[in-house]
Amino acid sequence: MSARLDLEMRDDAGDGQGGIVPGFAPVTSVWARIEPVSVNEEEQADEAVFNVTHRIWIRFREDVQAGMRFRKGTRGFTVRTFHDPDETRRYLVCRCTEDGR
Figure 1 (cartoon, rainbow, N blue to C red):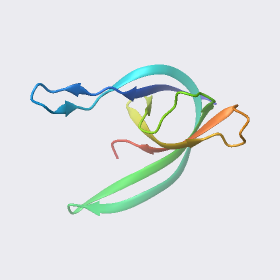
Figure 2: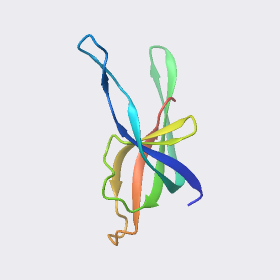
Figure 3: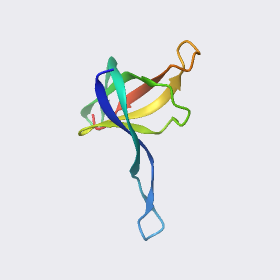
Figure 4: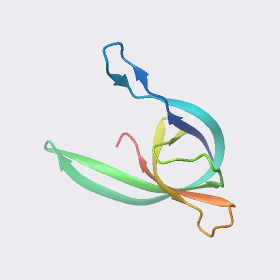
């Protein structure tokens, strides 16, 4: 586990006109291992869009939820699913998609 990541939770704010402005608030920093899993290319509005998925390993935490995000500098990784790989509560494996691709 050699990557230092910030774990963030959703913290939407009102825009003053009845809508919301999506945002995130920091929860904590964690040491993690990032494993790229796959890259899928699809076309949207005549433009290639790449979806990159990762497996992110962290020490076990009970407060991780789908929709939270890991941040490493300018890169963001949205948590889609997570599980305890051997049910010993030592590690948590998060299946994430990289934002902004």
